[in-house]
Length: 258
Ligand SMILES: [Zn+2]
Image (tube, rainbow, N blue to C red):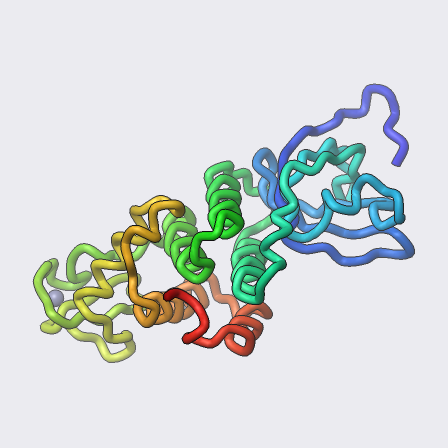
């Protein structure tokens, strides 16, 4: 890409959500950037063996981009790797749950909607997994925090119908966006325990790197993961993501969280 004098260079940091090979040595990237939101980036020649762009345009890479806006894509003028998050590839748990977080961003967010809070949320989630936090717990926390930032924070503190705060058993309704007490049960909702309701709130309010201190049992984490899958699927109108099949087939409920 030849940049003419006077053409505006846009500086932004971004995390690569997806990369598709294009022609011999180029890639079309989907990048979630802090300054521009989700954008499509043409990485011309980034797959050439000696290209400095190889590592900085890999999926998961957090990089600083100098971009020029074209008709259909942003084009890379230069790119500098900040963090490859490479160790997420070291196990199936971290890889698949990391993919899930990226795919969730890719499939639910429209292009060029600027939201630096979402960028920071994504970066903190990947950082927590990189630093050895339990990946499923981070993914669940990401689900809850993400939907809340997107305007779909579920009603978890009181019954969505009568305002009751005391109930031993609750139901969580994806369509109504909250919990219902035992007096107000609706049929299309999923039953959750009082403990699970409290855990939902705690996960939502706890920073990624403190989640471990909540000592949440693995069956409760899986329960909330599945609850949030349904909630996200309903509210964002997305079908099953590719990473969900990977998680289902590659991660059993017994081989993590001890
Ligand atoms: Zn009620």
